[in-house]
Image (cartoon, rainbow, N blue to C red; front, side, top):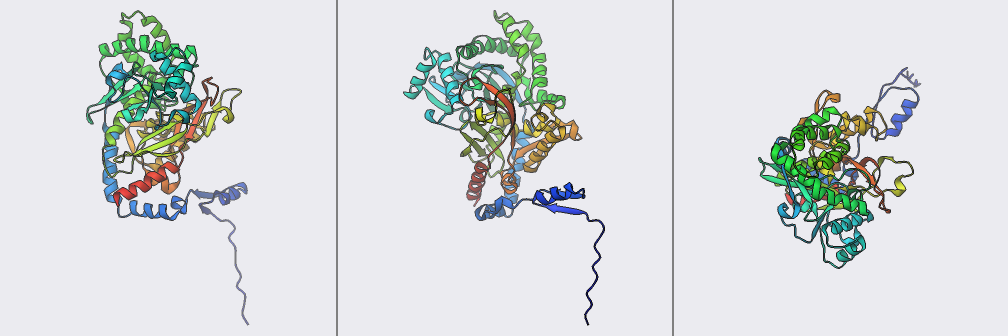
Length: 471
C-alpha cells in the first residue's frame, strides 16, 4: 500500500519576482517580503529585433564596444569653450540669407505644428522680410523663405525656436575635436517666440536680443575671454541644476564670471540688458546646448558605434541619429508624460514634445542628472526617490558615466553618459528628457513643464540600420 507523503509548507517564503510586477504588488499588499526584478523580454520578443540584438550583442560586440569607448572618450574629455557671439548668417556654415533654421528633424511648412509655424512667422518679421505675421506666412508658403533643420548646420535651438541670419548666436568651440557649434540666445520667460508665440511683443523681444542683448554679451565675452562651459555646469549640478529644466545655479555662475566685463560696458543698452539678465534664470540653457552639440558632432565622426549622437523633436516628429551613421530615424513626437501644468491647462491643451535641447541628455545632463535636482523631483511625484529613479533608468541604457558631472546624492557617482541604442531596444527603456510644455494651438506660450520619455520606434529603426551597416 502506498503512503502519501506529508508535505510541510514553510511558515515564511522569501520571493524574488522576475518580470510581471502584478505578482510583486500582490505580495506587497499582503505584507510579504519580495524583491522585484525588472526583467523584460528582449526587443519585445519580435524575431527580427531579437536577431539583430543577438548579432550586435554577440559577434559584433567587440567592434561596437571599441567604437563606443572612443565616443565616450570624446563626450567626456572634450572641453567646449564659449568663444564669442556672432551673427548667425556670418558664422553658420551653409546658412543662406533667406534661410530660417528650426528645431528638430526636417519638416515641411504645412506639416509644422502651430507653435513652430508661429515661431517661423515671428522670425521672418524680425528679419524684416515681412511687415506682419500674415505676410510672413505667405512668404514661406510661396517658397521665398527656406526652412532648414538647425541640427544639420551644427546648431541647436530650444523648444519651438527658429532663427534667421541676423539672429545672434553663441559660438562654442572644442579644440580637441576641432568642432564648433552654435545656439540662439535665450529670450527669457513669458510670451516669447521660443515658446511658440508670434505676437508683436514676442517679435520685439527678438529684436531686443539681436540689437541689444547680443551686442552687450558679445562685448563682455570679448573682454572676459573664452568661458569653459562644462566647468560651470559641473559646479551647477551639485547645486541642484540638471542644466536643462533647471539652470538657475549655473546661470548665476555664468553671469558672475561675466559681471566685471558687463559693468564696464559702454553700450547704450547696458543697463536695460542688466535688468533683463537679472530676471532670466534660463540664460545658460542655450550655452550648454551649444557645448553639448560641439561634443556630439565630434563623437558622431566615429564609425561602428551604437551611441546616439542626435536626439531632437520638431513637435511633430522625434528624430535620432547614431555616431557614424548620419541618417535620421523618426517616430511621432510624444506628449510630455510626467508633467505639471499651470492652472487651467492640461494634456488637452499641450503641444507634443519639441526642441533640440535633448542634446543635453546625450552628454550626461538633463535626465541623467535628475537625481540631484529637487526641482526635477517635483515633476516626477515630488520625492527625491522619484528623481533618483529617473537617473537609475538612464544608467540602464547608457554605456558609461561622466567623469565631470557628479551626483552627491548618489555618493558622487558620475551622471549616465552615452545612450546605447542596443540597451534601449533590448530593455524597452527610452531616454527621459526634461523639458517645458507649450500650448498646442493658441500661441499663448508655456503652459507647464515635465519629463518626456522618448518613443521607442525611432531607436528600433536605428538599431536595425546599425545591424545592416555592420553586416
